[in-house]
Amino acid sequence: MYFEMFQQMKKMLGQFDVWFEHAEAHAKAKSFDANVYLGLRLAPDQFAFARQVQVACDTAKLGAARLTGREAPKHEDNEGNLGELRARVHSTIAYLDTFSAKDFEGTSTRVITQPRWEGKTMTGAAFFLQHVVPNFFFHMSQAYAILRHNGVPLGKRDYLGVLDMRAP
Amino acid sequence: MYFEMFQQMKKMLGQFDVWFEHAEAHAKAKSFDANVYLGLRLAPDQFAFARQVQVACDTAKLGAARLTGREAPKHEDNEGNLGELRARVHSTIAYLDTFSAKDFEGTSTRVITQPRWEGKTMTGAAFFLQHVVPNFFFHMSQAYAILRHNGVPLGKRDYLGVLDMRAP
Image 1: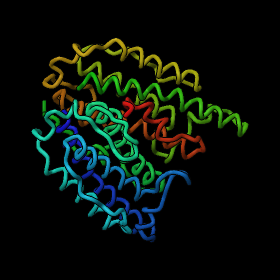
Image 2: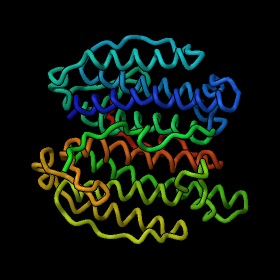
Image 3: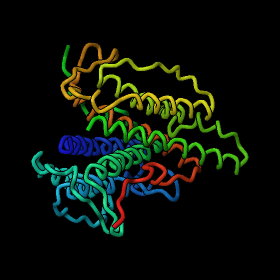
Image 4: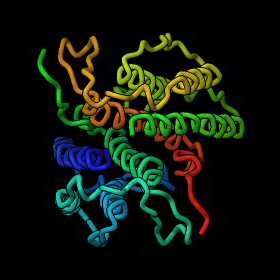
């Protein structure tokens, strides 16, 4: 299910386009610069909107890379407007598009580490369940909360995207 | 991985206890009634804190029930203070404790529906990936955002809980 969950994350990253459009429309209707959103935050010691989007992207990107033993492309985290943030999201989606189900064979038992863990490790299964999935949805949801709190008319459908439902 | 993800959701529901304690401590320090938190929201047309907690609980409860073909216990959604909200969370955790990995055999291809879908269906796999997982973390994260925005000093560790890391 690793691959399928990354497909789901990819789909949801695609929803950022819809959010950005709503943010731009709201800014236009209220006559302010939509790029103001990049610096908004819900608490002074919490990441601002731009950083929430970057971290959501990186959680998916680095999650897929680490769980498959691949090297992830670097991003400079220097996006200064919604257009650049949109490009960051698209770049992440394009990277996730390079994976296939086969890449995740053996992921469960792979030993995962990262510099900030100071030598500690997690199994691939634990890293995925306890770190990647909760963090990905957390940062997407904080980004959503920042927009909602600041007047952007988003709804649950803008978060989930279209569900694969079958007609009766 | 269905069972393992529900185990993860159960673990994270357990973090609500920590959040409630932080909220109560903050309210005490500022001399206000901690139950005020139940009605706080980030936008007038978004669910308040209590409802976010209830929906997080129900997403896990109903997700596990529907994916295994079991009947879920009913909750009245009438929690009026943090103590009752805490009991609601504990009741959900106790329900999730009744499942084993075996219960989720055949879940991927199970046909899922619910009254509000008006006869439409999803496969178990799609329901889990597109609905249960994104919604569970969404509502936990909105609850987190409401507390953070209103002064409760939560951090990422309070959200994730303890990670299963191995010493070097």
